[in-house]
Length: 97
Image 1 (cartoon, rainbow, N blue to C red):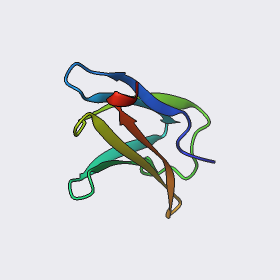
Image 2: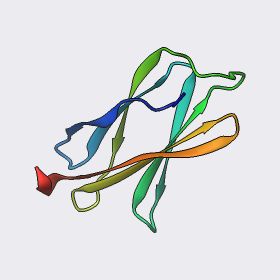
Image 3: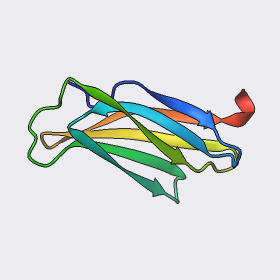
Image 4: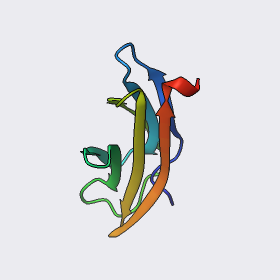
């Protein structure tokens, strides 16, 4: 079972930043990190402490990412039972709208 379900950006903010939304099980949490050298964000999703299986109930999470030159590159990864899986990557560029 995947920890990440639906994902996408909610809106572009006046600041040029992007608000992303994504669905994860309600017994999971996420952290974000930024690689300044490669210029991308990673959203890491994992089960809450003490949990062994993801819930079938998903909740929508929201997080704002800063753009660089009107582009934001976000990558997802999941950790489930010690196995790390790379998930979809999304690049948003305001000039393509």
